[in-house]
Amino acid sequence: MSKFVIEGGTRLKGKVDIGGFKNAAVAIIPAALLCTGKCIIQNVPKIEDVNVFMDILDELGAKTSFLNDNSISIDTTDVKECYLKNGLSKKMRASYYLLGAGLGRFKKASSLLPGGCDIGARPIDQHIKGFEALGATVDITPEGRVNVQAEKLVGNKIYLDVVSVGATINIMLAAVYAEGRTIIENAAKEPHIVDTANFLNSMGADIKGAGTDVIRINGVKNLIGCEYRVIPDQIEAGTYMIAAAATKGDIIIDDIIPKHLEPVTAKLKEMGVGIEEYGDSIRVFYEHELTPVNIQTLPYPGFPTDLQQPMTVLLSTLSGESTVVEGVSEDRFKYVNEIRKMGANIEFTKKHAKISGINHLSGTMVQATDLRAGAALIIAGLMAEGITEITGIQHIDRGYEHIENKFMNLGAKIKRVKDEE
Image 1 (cartoon, rainbow, N blue to C red):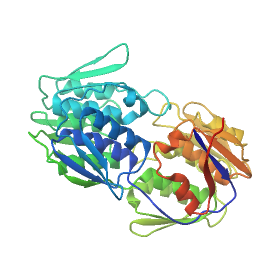
Image 2 (image 1 turned 90 degrees about the vertical axis):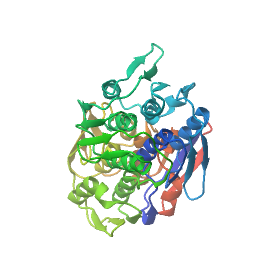
Image 3 (image 1 turned 60 degrees about the vertical axis):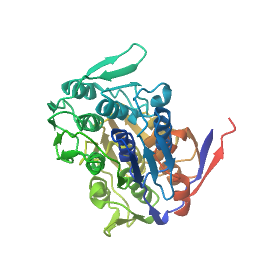
Image 4 (image 1 turned 180 degrees about the vertical axis):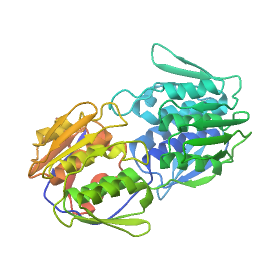
């Protein structure tokens, strides 16, 4: 096991390149199972979740390989079934996309319930509702294995009771081979849903409306391999934007889609952060003392739940009071206890945090409790006086590619060392 050791107090300066969107990649990779052929997927982040997915596909009989320049090759011609035999699916949340892809191609799939970050209950009831509406039966064993199967899949109108990114994507995956038309109402609108739909269409699917709350899928008979490029990671970009503000820095974030960052940009501007956009890049710089703001996370295009933790850390040292309301995840404030060890004055419940700003955070030993909390702790360490040591960084590696190298290139004093304990 390793840990990050950070010496705080350095203003970040320079340029950082953003990689492919983790949340899109982990939907597109299992979607490749729907075709009988080879897909070349470009701009894939080199993160642990991608490694796990490649291992899962290899065990299913696919031929996968990592190519140069963040590209991967997936050939699923020889895959005969989608039965996940071991516990790899427990290592990440997105493994449930293999249920939709397997159901679509083979009319059956089986996997253990997904794992991922511990941020509260994240049920798959809307996924099940969608599968059943298409004609599948779903059985969950006492051991936590999910079995889905259907004699045939038939298009249907499906209304999601709650806006769910995972259910929206999973229903799309299953519906591409369903007879007739499937309509998903109250669909999620996140950019990675659009990216997944565009990838499926590149293979020959007929999906319209992705990015709106009504998605229409006309079933097709066959999908073929393709080449596709994953969109930039808006959460990675937002993390560096917040880090620039938190360290009173001045950085250019390159290879982005600024529109995807509008909720973050708007809040940072409201705080007084300097922001300039240049097509596919953005400059974030500190101009003057920042003022506190109130934030509520919401489904896209609202403020993203995945950036709630880094933003809360930034707010912790602004003079005055801020409130953060978590409107997406059930229990995403567990990390606050770690920030409190650094001196932060934050009161919180499962859905609400009240932040009273202090002068500065103080370095100490803290533990990453989940992926985005880990990124928040890095920002806290960069802000803090003294040395911060972060354990549990395997969570961070699930979603950020070479995060310490990118921060070092911006001038941060951060290193990965072996945790002797």
